[in-house]
Every structure is written in structure tokens, then in C-alpha cells.
Image 1 (cartoon, rainbow, N blue to C red):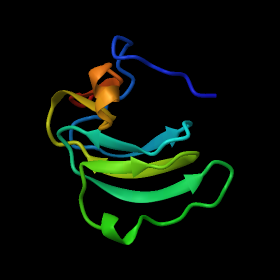
Image 2 (cartoon, rainbow, N blue to C red; image 1 turned 90 degrees about the vertical axis):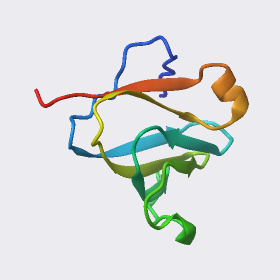
Image 3 (tube, helix red, strand yellow; image 1 turned 135 degrees about the vertical axis):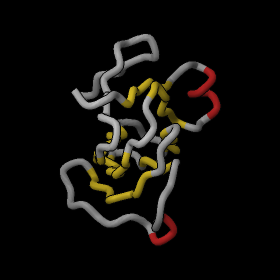
Image 4 (cartoon, one colour; image 1 turned 120 degrees about the vertical axis):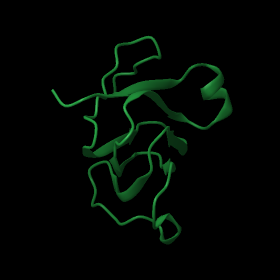
Length: 112
């Protein structure tokens, strides 16, 4: 079950500076969401319907991106290298979502 986390909740994504991570974006809604991750370029790895088989990215998604469409009822996977230390945000680019602070902070941290 999804657990919604608002802007004011503790940061849950803390990639280590220089690390490569695969992020899974789970879309439990009935709408597609253009997800933008600030300060990093990523590659779209695949999408997988809940309970289904993964499929490769769309042909137009080749190369590095900063926004990906998360389709309803699917997990979208992206791979990013985090090269800039600091605190940034990731969010949906639907304006009403941005306006209502429906975004999350993440912080790129030094190695422990």
C-alpha cells in the first residue's frame, strides 16, 4: 500500500555523492504523471505494470532525461548518477501538484 509523504516529512532519499542509483516510481493513481528530478540527468530503465512483466522505455526516451512520464498502475525505473552535493527536489510537473507542494526533497550526501 502506498504511504503518501508530504513536503514537510523527513527526507527519505539520500543518495551518496558519486553513487549510481535506480529509483522506482510507483504510480498508484489513475493518471500519468510527468516526474521531474532536479539537478540530475537520468536514464529510463523500464516500466512494469503492477503484477506484470517489465518492458523497455519508449523509443523517444533514449539518452539522458530530467523528466519521465510515470504511467498509471505501473512502476517506472530510472538510473541516475548523483554528482552534485546538496538538497534538491523531485516532483510531478502537473501545475496543480506543484502549487500544492506535492513534491519531495532529496539530499545528496557525502560518503558515510
